[in-house]
Image (tube, rainbow, N blue to C red; front, side, top):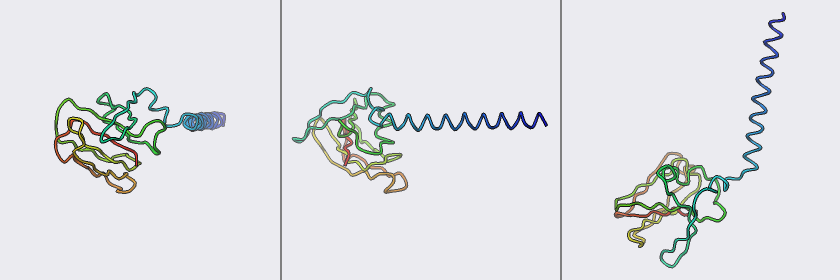
Length: 144
């Protein structure tokens, strides 16, 4: 009987710890808006075709891989993200875990060579890709 009571007490304690951990996590998420996730990123102004945008810089491979995945609403203080490459290649982007629709600017030598619309994963339900019309050395993702 004492062994059963001890097992029940341990189970209750484990459940309480799990519940408290979940509650603390949810509170932390509410106190720390998604914008804070980008606070260590550089934001730079970029002008093309007479328009100036404030863009988060994807300045590492990890940041470029992540892109704007998991963003659920446009970020304050940023119009999107910029990806710069050391070479000219055809570029392809996809909407995996991209919850907002984006406009893509394909840029070659500081000149826009094309644009694409990248729908959110919620719209397509399966990943889709968009590709640059020609080789590009810069890609800009803009919130719609």
